[in-house]
Image 1: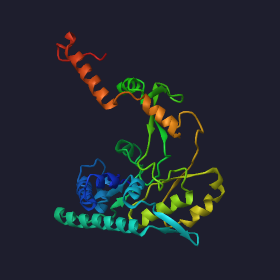
Image 2: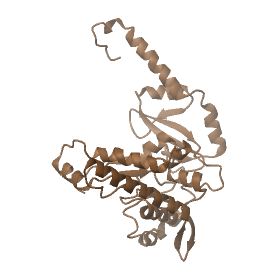
Image 3: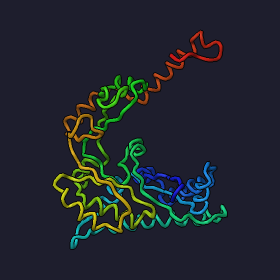
Length: 315
């Protein structure tokens, strides 16, 4: 509602289960954290009023396709009957159970805090940057391809740029923005070699919208964020496909799936041979190299005689 800020907590269920964590307990902790956020100090009265009235939470799932693949070995949509999607019942139950865990945790913690239960609890956020850091698929989206290049932009003065170049990553000036460098990272997604793996280029627009509606039904009472990728040959059928999900989803975006459509695309599908060549070019761990570089820089600053007055010059 107007003036109401987002209050998001993101769960990566595949990573949680890989670490042996109980998803119900993870969800309960997410609720406790997000609920406490509603008691924060907000600058605008319109925000304070909306938050106190709604106590809206946004407990989000991400890496969803990774989870479906690792735990269930299946996508949400397992078939079609009379033009309507048939869903994996085990996944539906797991999501419903997890939603109930969130709802129960909110009711219990609300009693402890002496406030009203939250009007809305769950969502699926886009999760672009956060999912990349976790090494997971983004939100509900399918991975771009079995092997792909992920390009990330850095300011040309960012110390990470030199470190990444020394470690063997391809670094080049961004052709669209000044003072910006473009770095290429080879990516092999989770489960890419499994027979059940599917990428954004493999899954129809119909199935993606059906998956969004599935998550809206069994998990999210806020919106499910989704960018549906479609092939050129699907373009004319999009109006009728979208009409079929009117009232079942809250909003969606559309993006044509293109491979090699323009230079320095954020994501570019590649073959196994190019992926292996890029991996072989990587000669060091950037995290370790960056740590070493920072230590050297700090030692150099400490040794500067012109820092004696308590302030060091910017070099």
